Image (tube, rainbow, N blue to C red):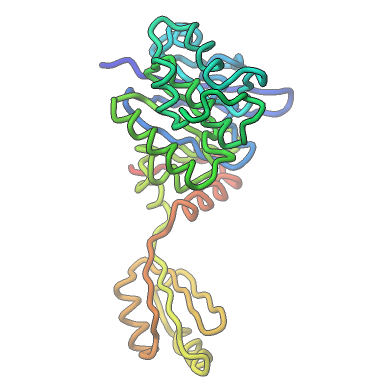
Length: 310
């Protein structure tokens, strides 16, 4: 059996009375693309620091490619892009990448690292003159210049505009197409949904869900049915819909209605029978946002892990 790219076993980290990471068990195989999600303070960044050997666990172990994280990093097998990663402000982007490349045995060329980050045009720009989004892309170039087998990214697209985010993920798809492993923490749920093979949700230092994007979203059952009626028919529609069974919720805003149902086909047929003038009908599945809120809210009041994809 292949040795996992990353393995956390009973991993915990406390700061005084605060437990930031609370007994995490997580195994990530080579070639996986895994998103870490969670509200602020969930333990994502601390977990990444522990995985990289930048912090010492209170208990438990963190291993990269079966060994000490520092050994994997020194061997150039791991690239990291961290929120607090500072670059020398007086150096150019090219010089900053070259400094890191010089520390590794078989790095990419500086130009290839620049191209992967989409910043060849910034090569001569001083770090102090970069915008927030440009600085993030420079950090990405530095993370990949060692030609790593594993990339660990903490909020990689923070401060990027929409176009920069699109270009970043295009570059990441090229990188992972080569069979490399990527672990990234993000607040952008759409990024996790569209890019990750697997999603791990943390809350209060614990893993509360672990599965594919589809499995995580399936935690929130049912679909939403939205429709409108003419303004003068809203009261009659409300009265008719009050007799509707088999729905999870009903919301009205002026002449627009939203129903959540476990059987959207049957519910829609009933709606059209009760309110035949309903129009502008939309049926949508629940989103990653819905699942994230459901999982993190339930976890706040429970110590049980929500199992997905079982």
